[in-house]
Amino acid sequence: GAGVSQSPSNKVTEKGKDVELRCDPISGHTALYWYRQRLGQGLEFLIYFQGNSAPDKSGLPSDRFSAERTGESVSTLTIQRTQQEDSAVYLCASRSAGGTYEQYFGPGTRLTVT
Amino acid sequence: AQSVTQLGSHVSVSEGALVLLRCNYSSSVPPYLFWYVQYPNQGLQLLLKYTSAATLVKGINGFEAEFKKSETSFHLTKPSAHMSDAAEYFCAVSAGNTPLVFGKGTRLSVIA
Image (cartoon, rainbow over all chains, first blue to last red; front, side):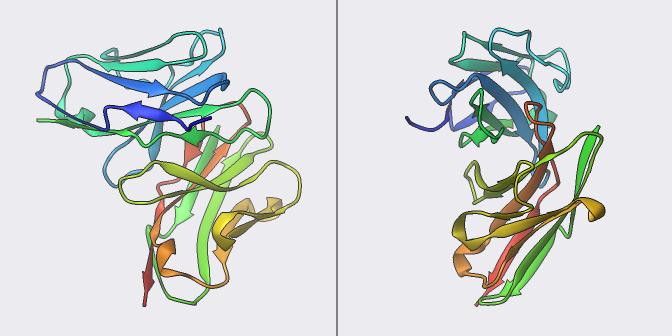
């Protein structure tokens, strides 16, 4: 089917506001990842969902960040009380259960905190 | 633990010249290695992957990479650069179903 989609593509928010970012993985993909890409930097892992297992939250930078996933479909990443250092592109990726472990990425959400 | 080092944050080549982007990895388990390309304002596209089969891996757009365990390297090459190859390239490692660990990326410029 279609690739990974993310919304919104761009989000500008004021410091202190909460934001929600959405990811629709490839249909049938059991694994879903969130990464953050700061300007001029590589990608940092944030959180990983695999089926019905407890998510791996080891990459979340603070308790202002949280994420949920409904079954094996949509995921939302929530950032509370946004700070300027949260400005980045947030990328979502999904992976099938079998295969050779490649992850397929969405186009990202560019978050700007003013 | 795993890590990736990409030598050279910026590489510039002439159109038609060889492209060589360097990647060295560190992994305590047999690695799965990937190269992704990112065009401006877009997500990451998989170029090629190494998953313990053949050590010379061919990918899309004429790129290939060779896994060298003794050198812990997975350098990306292309015999002849095209203007359309100008982009950011990321090398990444995982243990399979674990999150990808990325290098900081190499920006490739192609000069006409």
